[in-house]
Image: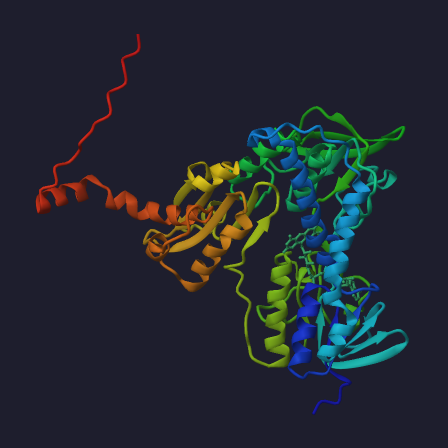
Length: 491
Ligand SMILES: Cc1cc2nc3c(=O)[nH]c(=O)nc-3n(C[C@H](O)[C@H](O)[C@H](O)COP(=O)(O)OP(=O)(O)OC[C@H]3O[C@@H](n4cnc5c(N)ncnc54)[C@H](O)[C@@H]3O)c2cc1C
């Protein structure tokens, strides 16, 4: 029996913290969860995944309405969008999901929830609201917040981040988005589709930096076709005001003449910073740095009984990773089994239209790690359902080892975030390409693209001159019944 007040204490009630709290309480551990803000749910629910995906859907409906003629329908004269009404829908979806993340639900599971900022006073004790609470193990799951770029004058102009964008009510005529990563692009496309004229400024030579360039190009092509201006390889130098407008001086990242952009609103989406401040981590003896609180594979910090999970450890900033790491903490801290995190099969998706989803290695990562691979590629334009849906854009890339084992898959195309799950199962289950290629898929579905991609590996071998020759020898097959006419010579 420990002499501490609680078996486990958790700081931060977002994706990681809530996973640990719910699990620990259900295992019968006396659990305390302390959340600084007045509500549970964290960034994902309040200013991340949920509001962004909700707004993406609203903007997607509008974009589809604009395409009515493409589907053989009368063209529509669309009125201006009331951003306030769109954001009301966002708030309603958040409120619905919030019911699931209520303190009452956690109390029913057996976890005590407290609101307000806590602070470590030693490595087992936290002070909160004038009282001290000790626990045998602690988990820091305080997440991250927007990182601001070093742009001169940024503090003198009004700008939005993911923390404020979802409370806007007036659609800006012109929107500047700093950052061409997933957060910036998802929001940029939403605003473009709702009616803003959007310009994205990205320092790197491509948008969606970690993705293969050819897949990023698929997305860029669609965004530009929808009217967005995307400036890659461009550095923001200075922000300022001209009347009610915001100005941004930019220059080529590799050097060159600066120029000025002007807009009615500015969204900053240039990365994340860990929430390490004010926690008293020094008093607890927990090491941390600018990237957050480093942990070992068992999610232990420099103090073996204090764990860090979610965005705070700076590994992979996704809700499903926070949940996974929360599970690793549970196994180590509550069940006391030495389970380690393995990030090699972490999937993710950027919810632009088209979506970009990934699991395992892509070409960039394989090349960086010196891992030999081959790519099997299949285009949405060859998928019957994609054509019926009017979504022929994009492709699937399957990376295989020289022996034909699946080592990764990337998809840029409609519903990529759903399609990737066949490959997540395959990679995790060690499924062979032959199983995927041989499995009957439903016709007509986008998912058939996966079967076709897997089948490519075999069709090249199966329908070869060698096989034809062998069958001719064995069964006397007679060969071609028709040969296309040779193209007429050019005059
Ligand atoms: C716009 C946007 C879109 C996103 N979309 C996706 C997506 O589609 N899919 C995806 O997987 N991920 C997405 N993410 C990332 C995802 O939101 C995060 O990875 C996830 O929320 C991390 O969970 P967490 O538990 O580490 O942090 P959070 O969920 O942010 O929880 C941290 C909690 O700690 C609290 N806290 C902070 N400081 C203290 C303190 N000192 N004391 C006590 N409590 C504290 C915070 O108030 C918060 O409730 C998105 C992020 C953004 C910004």
